[in-house]
Amino acid sequence: MIKVLLFAHLQEEAGRAQLEIAKGELTVGDLKKLLTDQYHLSKMENVMAAVNEKFAVSEDLVKSGDTVAMIPPVSGG
Image (cartoon, rainbow, N blue to C red; front, side, top):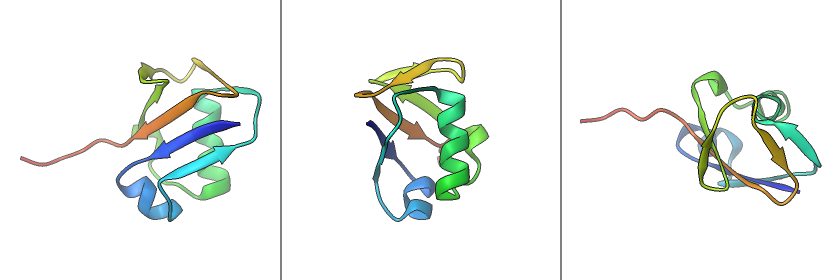
């Protein structure tokens, strides 16, 4: 299982702060697509990902047991 932590608008769209994905291994890009397709999360192309508390790019692998934080851009002043 891959634990996915959601923040800001992603949390509101999913209706929860955390998801469990039953996959063995996939890329960050594939995970974003899965979240868009299965959970109807929007604007995933602008979302940063951190795998086990280290920022990751679309090609990085996510494995079972990993925790992925999906962090949308924030604005404010």
